[in-house]
Amino acid sequence: MAQDRIIIFDTTLRDGEQSPGMSMNLEEKLMVAEALDTMGVDVIEAGFAMASNGDFESVHEIAKRTKNAVVCSLARAKPADIERAAEALKPAAQARIHTFISTSDIHLKYQFRLTKEEVLVIINDTVKLARKYTDNVEWSAMDATRSDKDYLCKAVETAIKAGATTVNIPDTVGYATPDDYGALIRHLKNSVPNIDKAVISTHCQNDLGLATANSLAAIMNGARQIECTINGIGERAGNTALEEVVMAIKTRHDLYNFATNIDTTHITRISRLVQNITGALVQVNKAIVGANAFAHESGIHQDGMLKNANTYEIMTPESIGLSKSNLVMGKHSGRHAFRERVLELGFDIGDNAFEEAFHRFKDLADKKKEIYDEDIIALLDNEARKEDPIQLESLHITCGTIGPQTAMLCLRVDGDVRRVTIEGNGPVDATFNAIMALVPHQAKLKLYQVSAITQGTDAQAEVTVRLENTEGQIVNGVGSNIDTVVASALAYINALCKLQSLRQRVSLSDR
Ligand code: KIV
Image (cartoon, rainbow, N blue to C red; front, side, top):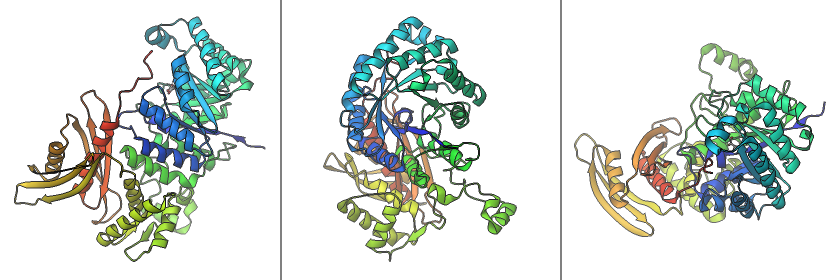
């Protein structure tokens, strides 16, 4: 039987980025967009162009650079939003405008203060306006799963009549279950007279932990686009995880007779890239990409695995790009081997960036005997910070049982070299006090978290620092280094740079 294609619509850079602490700067968004494009994502929702000048710029840059995927911008059901999205998407080879409005009684009464009839007029007008700029228009019925079914059908029909080519049925509040979500999609498929003129899409939030199951139920009932994010990041409990739906379709092909365009061997690398950039580490037992997802600990499982991997493994680590023996290099490894490894890990960097990365690799190899893939990924991700306004020049720490613990710190701030020596309650506290003295700010430390990137006492530490500014905006900074205190300084500096670049955004619910 011929397989239907499922369109994978990634919204890591929009729904994912919209959640607290997940904001990314332009460089970081470009890296994620490139990785999504390379792995075969069909549609990249690059942002919400009207939200801020920064969002506009990132949609515009991603539109310019993306080679294969359709690039999409979100827009509320307002002419100014749609025009701004169209402007940002101008350079795209394939552009989609994604406009939305709520359809549930509760949203219309309390949030939008509009009647159902007024909303139908808005849907018609805004979809028609979007179609003036592109023939690829997606319309979403926010809070679809809590909407009156007959009204939802009417709204979907109106959107398609006005020119929507994709109709998205979001479970905005994560309320649906697989049975009722599947039934809703089937109902739309059977009841909306012009439904064959559009692709039905799913967008499931994970409040009840059902996002992946709901998305799969939707495709079994007629949906052909899944909206998802890397590592399942997104509003509140997150969104459908791309790696979960794609691997479920691939692994349970006996049930899901569908194909996606995703090269699944890119999953591990992009998962780590997103973790590194956002500072949101995935839980160790997270499906597909958690650190324990392929670890077999119990004796009986290990015994089975040694006899035949199929006894306890339903998919191979290689199928998601997790190399079994990831011990790759040491200080004797040369340029050629390093370049090969960098390419295998999916990084395509220019000659200058490569030379700098190679020097850093040699420095690291002098301090650490065995260099793992994770070390190289962390090192390459650090390269992307070179243009940040605050740079760590040097850090010297005095610590141990005989106090006081002291940090001698030198930073370059907007090109100016600044130095200070300061004490603290321990080396990390002293370092953070020093940063505060050189870059005075009001932000409060909300989280300080350390983990080891690989095994061994010489492993690199990965530190996440979460800061909140006086307007309540939250950012996560990440730093990795063989020295935990240096990693902490890098993470703090990264968070400060993110706060500086964070501009006031309009919210999706502003009317
Ligand atoms: O959750 C939601 O309803 C959304 C829409 C804007 C698609 O994010």
